Length: 345
Image (tube, rainbow, N blue to C red; front, side, top):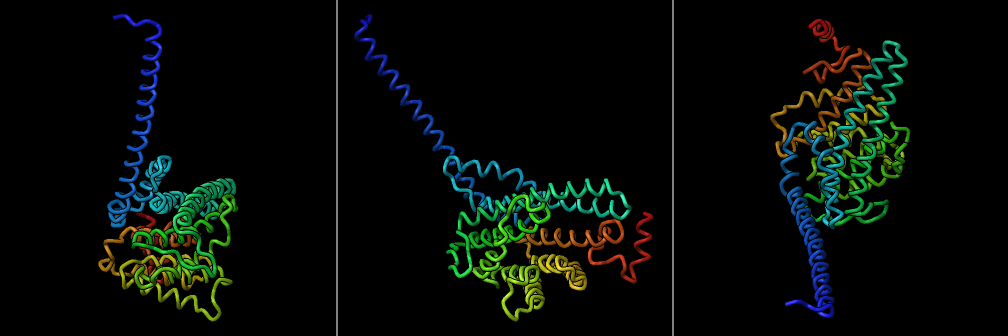
């Protein structure tokens, strides 16, 4: 049966409308599938991936995971999934890669200065600043994600409601990220423009967490900031006593994150006695007492402590901390001969 022209037009319009509806449904269907996929990934990341990663002792693997996973994870925001809390953690992990590269460049700078090679030193300093800028951007993004999720804790403001252990962990990492971003941005000539009042807000936010539950880290954060920025310290505060108390609490819990804060604080203000004590205490700790469920945090602390030790060794000898000898120093009376023998091997 042949259709005449008057019959073909309505049929054509019907087919066109059906095709259009099918296309819309297909697009919406993809969006629904993508959002569902994003929601599943976010839930999996929170309930399975994060606890698993925390048992890792390989900081390099964790930082590579942060660099590789963050863009993929955050892309699901475009289909209305919410990876904000996970992005706090992955951006912080990704910053560890840039931090290590900045340290390597800084050590190259020190070696060049020791031998009077100005051109090499200038190039190394430039490289250090480039990597420090990347670290500052990632850490600041981690902090801003925490602010997006929980709000910014300003002076005299109430603490946010943290509904779970995961929320408390993310909130704590966000405050640490903000403080670290400030230091890296200073190294990078304030290129990123991290607001300087972050330190005061992080100090205030640390009071929102249970100090005993989180291995003394909240008090460690506060005392570290008091040491580096004395204007934040309450009247009569004993910074070193507070830090040492936090270190002991961390040792008791098997998470040595406060040791790293202690060493970084002492190194930042040029207190050589406290730096050496902090590094030795960290190195002499019985590692069989470590908490395996939070091994990654301890491993990150170890990298921070070793980084300070490497800076000191390189400034004074031109080489990093000798392998397996964290906790010793080049001028230790009993170690001088051993160092010379190692150099020949």
